[in-house]
Structures are given as C-alpha cells and as structure tokens.
Amino acid sequence: MDITGASAIVTGGASGLGEATSRLLAQRGAKVVVLDLQEEKGEKLAAELGGTFAKADVTDQEQVSAAVDAASELGPLRLLVNSAGLGRAARIIGRDLSPASLDDFEFVLRVNLVGTYNCARLAASAMAATDPLADGTSRGAILNTASAAAFDGQIGQTSYSASKGGVVGMTLPMARDLSRHGIRVNTIAPGLIDTPIYGSGEQADAFKAKLGESVVYPNRLGTAEEFASMAVEVLTNDYANGETIRLDGAIRMPPK
Image (cartoon, rainbow, N blue to C red; front, side):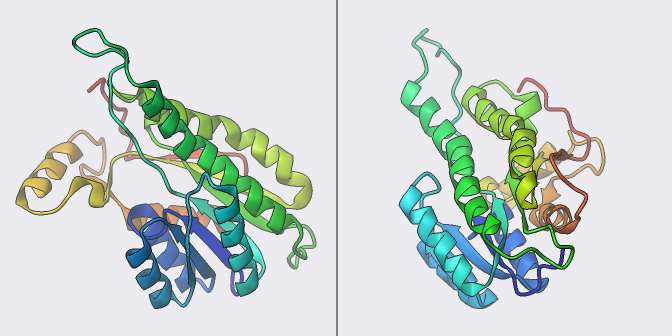
C-alpha cells in the first residue's frame, strides 16, 4: 500500500514506540497526527515531522473524533497505529490477603483495550469513507499493539495481560469486520523493548543489560526503531491481515 500523502494517526505517538513509528511513517511520506496526552513533546514532534498534534485521551470519543477529523484534513486517513498503553503491577491479593484494586484493573483495561477499540472504530469509519487506492479495493490499515504479556503474563500482570490478551483476541474478528471496506487489521506483540520507561543513566543501563540476557537472540532489549520497522512493513504489506506477530527475540517470559 502506497502511503505517500496519506494521513496516519499514531496514539501514544509522542514517545517510545509511538514516536519511532511516527518518525518512520513521516519518512515514508505519510502525514502524521501525533495523538498523545504529552502536549509539549507531542507538539514538538508534530512540528518536526510536518504533521499535527492532537491532545486526546484514547478512551474519549469526542477527543479521538477530533483527531480523526484533523487527520482527514491532512489527507485521506489510511493508517492507525494504536500504541498508547500502560500497566499497573499488582498481585490479585496482597501479602496481607487484601484484594487488589478493582478500579486499577478497570483503568488498565479501559486504556489498553477499550482505548484501542475506540480509536479503531472511529478511524475505521473515516477510512471506509475514502476512495479506494489504485487496486480498487484497499482503503487503509490498522495496527494494534499488544505485548508478550498477552501470552506469558508475569506475577503482578493480571490486568496488563488481560488487556493485551483482549487486543490479541479482537484482532481477527476486527479484520473480518472491516474486510468488506478494504481495511486490514494486525497486531504486534512486542517483548522487552528499550523505551523511556526504564529510565536513563548507569544504573538503568546495567538493569537493561541484565534484562536483555533473558532474550534468546539477540541477547538485548529490542529498540523502538525495530518496532517501527515492523509496524510500517505490516501496515504497507497488502497481504498482512488478521495476524498477531510477536516481536521479542524468542523470549518466553518467566513467572517473575
């Protein structure tokens, strides 16, 4: 799929996986809407890429709809990358036998799963209204972000794993729903990726090096650029559809 001149929305686009993907999409000729809550970072990146920043909560219908409208003004909306997400570690019962917070569980599911669905449904509606590309049928592609935790959830990751497992679970039916409109849907499930969440400095570097030893090969954390490379390939490869791809150096996460 030729994305030159098309618009793309990248949620969580101001940093980490989203930033790297935003940069690569812009390099490939797309006009990027950086959707994020980090206003300063998002505006700076959007200006650098010649795109637009949209401050939005992925679970907010009106804010995401405004971002979709902004994207459609830049060019036909062809691409959505759902990379916004978060986690809150907690065992289902604590050391004192008290149950984990239901509010925290619902919050993680709301952002990671409901937010992904919300952005996908609103973007897909706009994509379906565009004229098809040269092949006469294709109109766009959606890429969701899950995690290796969807399959190998660790201790304390019940809410995170549930949310990412939900993203994996809705990938195929979403692809089937949207096939009649020429819109493909795929998911990447990254493993240990070096993003700002690990911090910086000597201690952080030592921690990341140790963490990387658990990866089968290569024995290191992945990079945001490697995620972006896979993301753009999946978005533009016309035969990639309905699939979840692990990007994790063959790691299978231990219990902790």
